[in-house]
Image (cartoon, rainbow, N blue to C red):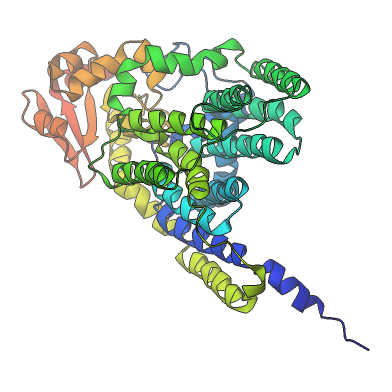
Length: 501
């Protein structure tokens, strides 16, 4: 009588297959690249916004953090994703934030790996494509709500590609996906463009040298258009109504100063490493396509053009390019030998997978290490000194744009001049004035106009050097990160006012 194989001998090849091995290697490298700490300027605002929401049970509709735009209309466009970071922070401090960030980044990158396999059918070429995506995506390896947006985009692409290629219909998941998406991050608009590209691509058998593909049947087209219509309606299911729907357009057309100030909204620099990787990936796709006379599917061609335009125009969208390029590159490299299950080595795969898990555990940062990273990037000691100088009455400070959120969370009794909520300050004209100060154009006029008593600036900045030599200003505190300057004129006036009370 023939003995039956044990459960372990049957499960081992499935659990530790070659694709799992490749996924583990990818996850290990991603963790190494993402292990940068949690010092992101927007994080502190996310935590404070959620704290306010849970305390008051009301969504924010006006600024309450600054003295320059207080009471001005403002909506919290990322309120839902902020809750996730807040809960992680409350549960496990900075380590909780790091765990959530790492989990989101790993989900995105493994999702890209899956998409690449879904489109190419070749796990090895999918792995190669995912490496290109990984290096492009490092532009946003930080605790950002943006990561939720990329996860939603990958989910959308998976639904659409499975429907187009395999007929597996999960289209009714799209409206709820967008409902959650718009309440989490503004990248929902990119998702709507991608959805439109897929629908439009199915109206053609092929364009030029594209690969002939079946058009949508009338029934398919009707269903897709119905889903699209319901999706648009779902966008309005949010606390702010139409204001949240039109926000991406407000950013694109009305926040010109903010866009010019933020590095990620600048054009890609092809002299930098990521720019070279982007250019190289475009070159590889086009060269292999021409040499092998490969033909494109219409939706892949449309997505490729959209991703190239977005990534070249804005550094921020290199991540988007990575998500789109990886499946296209994986399909382009169809000459890479395919995975053969019979040649698999599950024991060796298991050793590597366990080694990757051990690497992640050993490299996991401690709370103190994360706190040190924060202290190296934010005015931890200087902010305490500033609070003692202002005697808890807030004062009028001019703070570094990147540090506004940190002050808002940790020192709520010190109203800020500006923070990373660029929209509210742009619309009130404050951001333009702040940029005048940064550019050292009539900087003292700006400080006089706002009756600035103290300035909290990066120690090595040109603005700090300027105030250190400006008449009427003196240094009252300095460390390697931040310097506090006092304006003698307004400090004396404030002291006299306090004495007279």
